[in-house]
Length: 181
Image (cartoon, rainbow, N blue to C red; front, side, top):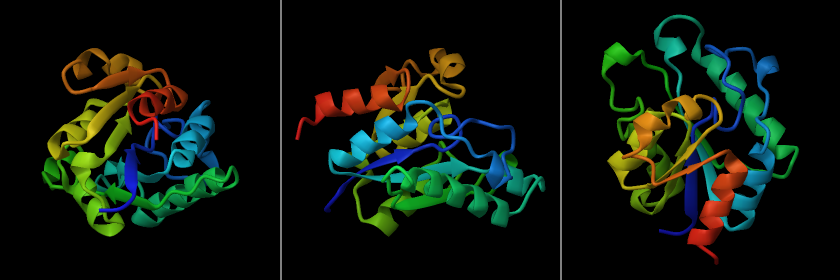
C-alpha cells in the first residue's frame, strides 16, 4: 500500500452540521478546518470523506443533492489548495441495516479499495460515536473532534476515541506528534 490516508466525517467535522443538509449554498466550512486539513495534506496524507446521508433513505432529498453538497465542500477546500481524494456516502436509513452506514465498516472498505490503502493504517476523524465506531471496526486510529456533535458525544466515545481534540487544527497537532515524518 502506498499513500497514508485520513478519512473524515463531513457534517460537524469539516463543515457546519445543518439538519439534513441538501442545499450546496448552505455548505459552510468550520473554523480550523482549512488550517487542519492543509497541515494534514502537507504531512503527506491523502484525505477522504465518509458520510452517512440518511436523508436520502428517508426521502428528504435525493442523491444528486448529496453529490452537490459534497462537490461544494470539495470546491471550498480546493480554493485553499486542499484536495479531497474521494468522497463516500451511505444513502440508507438506519433501519435498512446496510453495511455502509457508519459505524459499519463498508464506507471505509469502499474508500480503501478505491484509494488503495489499508484501513488499519488509516486515521478516522469525526464528531460522533458512529465515526469512532467505523474506525474501531476497521482498525484505524480514531480522533474525536469537539466540533459539531463532538462535545456532547465525548462521554460516549471514551472507549472508542484514541484522541479527543477541539477541532481539525488539534487533530493535525496530534497526527504530527504521532507521525513526525
